[in-house]
Length: 282
Ligand code: AMP
Ligand code: MN
Ligand code: MN
Ligand code: MN
Image (cartoon, rainbow, N blue to C red; front, side, top):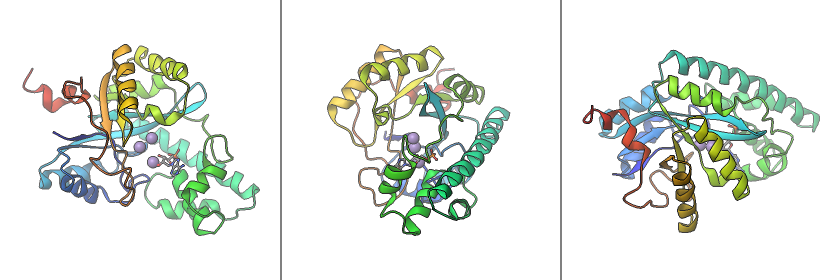
């Protein structure tokens, strides 16, 4: 069984439609795929319908933007009920934060001399929830930077003008939303925050103390050392293990559906707690 429990569609900042994403996962031999768009579940129903046609198990998911000690941190919700009142309320709140944040990012970019940022980013987002990648596309296509990487490095990444993070809800709020929606809370891509080990452990501890369920021990390709290290941290704080590609678009060989570092066979996977796997036990 190949579990890819972190992926994005055009409902947030991914390139493929939810249906195309499911087909690509299926072609890559993924047996269980979680669609985890940023702060939205708008793609779930389309993905689920396609998954039924492709004989793939689709897990309804979301990647919530959260914060801990002033840093922007992502928490994935897996096996949620996307139609629940809790989830719908959460998504509405996050959408309001994103809209306000987009206006603030645009104002900052305008002050730097980049006119028309808001309209352009909104145009790229279309019906999807707006995010920094849409501003990155504006900066690239208007010729202000060479590529997306440079857009984040100079204007949108951590500590830069477009990095407005104080608006996101805290761990407690996000974990509550996920649990109220019947889901499981996963601390996403721990290696991507570039924290010291002691800071990372303090964060994982806080997440576990607040009832978080799992750590995303594997996110894309990573070294066996990193995997061992993250596994050790999951065990230390009593968290289950999750894994996923964090796929956004084709053509990025380091971030492809179903392609990521492998886990030991006997790992304590979060998938054991999915509803479908509990039916036989109840
Ligand atoms: P937001 O959800 O608006 O906070 O934007 C964060 C998203 O931007 C992430 O989920 C990534 O998809 C993307 N991103 C962040 N850093 C970079 C980077 N350095 N290069 C390209 N994309 C990035
Ligand atoms: Mn993204
Ligand atoms: Mn993320
Ligand atoms: Mn992601």
